[in-house]
Length: 196
Image (cartoon, rainbow, N blue to C red):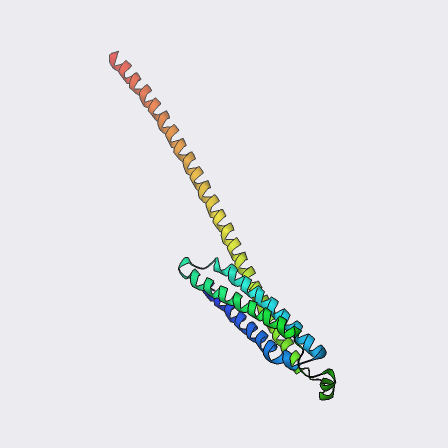
């Protein structure tokens, strides 16, 4: 997967998580009270932690982007960080605000855990997605490591070939020098014979 595609995948994850946090802050938390409200606030806090992790992944991925498009994605990352800060402030306000039905009304209305069940299913799905992304990153790291080892092996083989060629050249040079000395001896012998 290209770096820009991976960045956009993180961006989509961030959009989904921030939308889920927004629904909890604006709709779910104000209409709840008691333990149900506390559980939803905790779920929103966990989603904020997940959103922070996604933004961190985006910042890491920026380093792998070509310079020509990096500034555009840096601007997007800054916007997402700003959105995340706003969500944190909104959640803090929503957590401290007293609203929603009273505990007595909630008891009379009957327990309804479907919202939390679906939130928990969403959380599980996002955790699975995060695990898959982590596994994908691990695979890419292993591939890079394997390629580095292969390159090192090729380099070592090339150096060995060069060493062997150098030895052959030195051997050929020594042979030529030896042949030259034989030729000199032969010439001296022929000259001596010619004088006699």
